[in-house]
Length: 405
Image 1 (tube, rainbow, N blue to C red):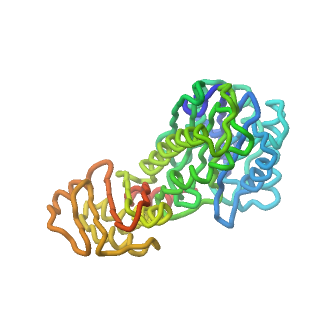
Image 2: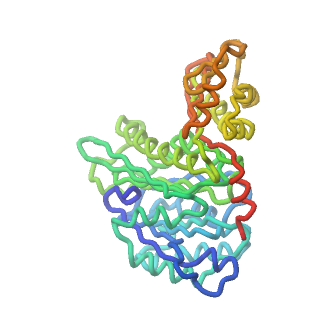
Image 3: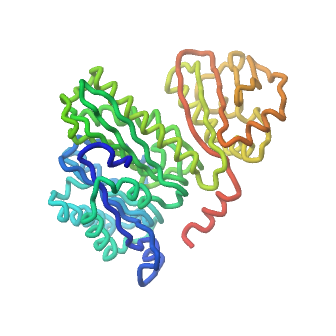
C-alpha cells in the first residue's frame, strides 16, 4: 500500500482527462487513466517540504510554502498532465481553488491542503474537469488507494514508484510509506520530481522541518537523469501521530531512528526514479568514498552520474573510463589524482595517477548489465556518498521531441 501503509492515511483517484483538455480536447477520451490523486490523513500532521530552486516556479510551490507555515496539513491533491507553471495570476487562483475544493470535500480549511501539479508548462488547468475529479477522488479515499495514487501522478513514468518501511520506536511499531513520480527533467536541487513520504509516528512540532533537507540531500538530491530541473519539484514529509508512540523530540536517538527509516524509503524511491529515467536501459550507481567531507563526496558522485559523456558511453557499451575520471576532476570536489582509485563493477581501472591493465571486454560487459556500479575512492577523508543516474539513449530524444504532441 506504500503511501497509505502508515495508519491513518487514505488515498483516492480520478480520471479527469487533464492532458487531453490541455491539448484542446472537448471531452474526456475513452479509457482515460486516472490523473488526479488525493492523499488524506485522519488527523493534522507535522509537515515539511523541500521545493525547486528554479527561479521559475509553479503557482503550487508558492501556495504550498505558505500553507506549510501553519503546520496543520492534512491532505494533498496532485494532478498530472499540466504543471500550472508560467500561468500568471490565473495559475495562483487555480491552485488556491484546488485547495479549497479539496478542503470543502474533506471538511478541512484550505491551508490544510497541499497542492501539486506536474506536466506541460505554460497551459491553464481545465478547472471544470479538475473540479469534478477532486469531488470523485475525495469520495473514494481509502486505505487501499495508495497504489492507484502512485499511478495517477505519473507523466512519462513507465512504472509507479512506491516504497515502505517500519521500525520499533520506543516500543511502538511505526510505519513509513512513500510514493513519487519522476522520469525526465531530473536533476538536483531538488531532484526534479514529486515525492511524498508519510508516517504514523508521533513527533514534536517542527521535527519534520529539522530533518527533511538532510533526507533530501542524501536521496533525491543525488538523482540525475538529464540535467534539467523542473518548475514543480516537491518533496514532502508528513507525520500524523497515529502510531501512538511518545512524541519524538529533535536530537534524540528516536529522532535518528525515524530519520534513518525515512531515508531508507527516500533512497529506495530515488533509485526507482533513476532506473525509470526517460529512455533509460541501465541504472548507474556511483559510490564515492574517501571524500574530504560528505558534501564533497556528494559533489563528486553527482558529477559522474550526471555526465552526458559517461551516460552515453555506458549506453553504447564503450569502456571509456577516462570520462569518469574527467567528471570527478571538474565536479568541484577536492581531488588528488595520485590518491584516486576507480573501479567499475569491481574491476580496477585507475589507481593513483594512472590507468591499470584491465580486460576492457569485461568492462564492456559490465556496461551491458541492468545496473552499473562505479566506485571512486578519493583518499582524502571520511566523506561517503552515493548518486544514481541512467544511460542516455536515442529514446530519450524521441520522448522529449514529442512531449506536447
